[in-house]
Length: 180
Image (cartoon, rainbow, N blue to C red; front, side, top):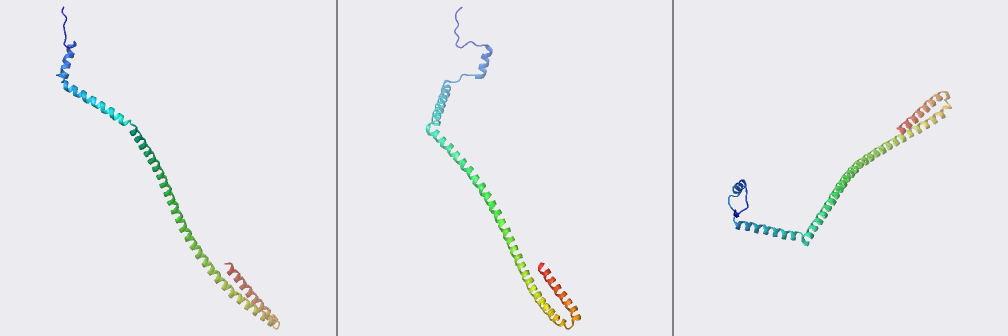
């Protein structure tokens, strides 16, 4: 038997039909070369981009950007803390102002009450002076009546007792008025 030369690898009949159904025809060589050229160009571009992305300047830029983000984050945190303390201080100031207003009103009320008490004390002192004067007049009258009482002893004893009781009653009234 003579050797047979095949222009392709031997295939099963089923595979041959399937291959023809998928491709239908052969791909032109120029298209394969163009796709290969595009793939190589993309690989070169990715390599160049990788070199630039990992370059010293790019890495330093990334590092500087990270430091800026960290500094910004720290400043934002400090700002929020300061704003919180400011709000707390404003609340305390508002509370203090409210307390000052209340204390001022209380002080004004206490001053008014003290003034009314001083006025009442002055009135009571005037009344006391009036009653002291009346008491002194009554005592002088009692002394006069005692002088006359020696002449009219029975009659004057009864009137002297009445006058003394009246004077004692006046003293009691003055004491009660001063107490209240």
